[in-house]
Length: 265
Image (cartoon, rainbow, N blue to C red):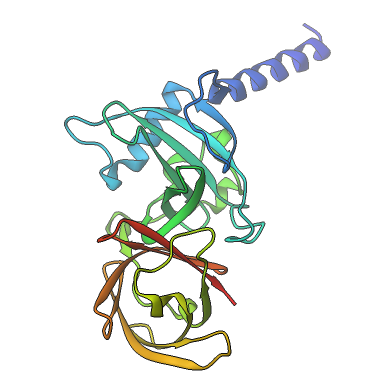
């Protein structure tokens, strides 16, 4: 066999490996304005990913992951910067027995972080669930070609005792002025909370000055954080922190089943 034929055969083998990693699926499993494309991952690599995700305890005796997809998503630039997901890959998980049918994870292999997500606005839009982060050893799946968004040598290697969940606490990134978006999301049931939120303070406790359109302070409250929740002392209200982005905050009112959005001024 001459060298040209040998090179051709090597190219075919390389292409076959790439195709075996992922293939475009025909059935629509994931829908919404967030989605560009979804590709199914082959069984061998699916098992590797399931093993990698096992510390998250997504499966139990009755619920197992049956398929894994590599997702390509649009960046909502009203929430995130355009390069927010540049060094991340997005996994779509299909379960055999799950009411929501699937779960989407955003993985940052060079940081060691995995974020789950929330689908909002009738499941059309996707946001990172930054109320809780999972940390893992990404070197366990560094050899899956279709998931390489940065150099595999840069994938985080983490000792077993550091693999864990991390709940959001008070965040310095919350400091600043935020305006409730009552057009794209729900209004707060307490009218006062629909005014501007000027937040300032340390990690565990912050003061909130609510201001009207003329920037006059209408009231002052204190907020505290625990297990991914924000508590307002004066109004005695609690909101689950869905995400804190550089451009937007999403809060969930569990009592009234409402999602609230605040945009950075």
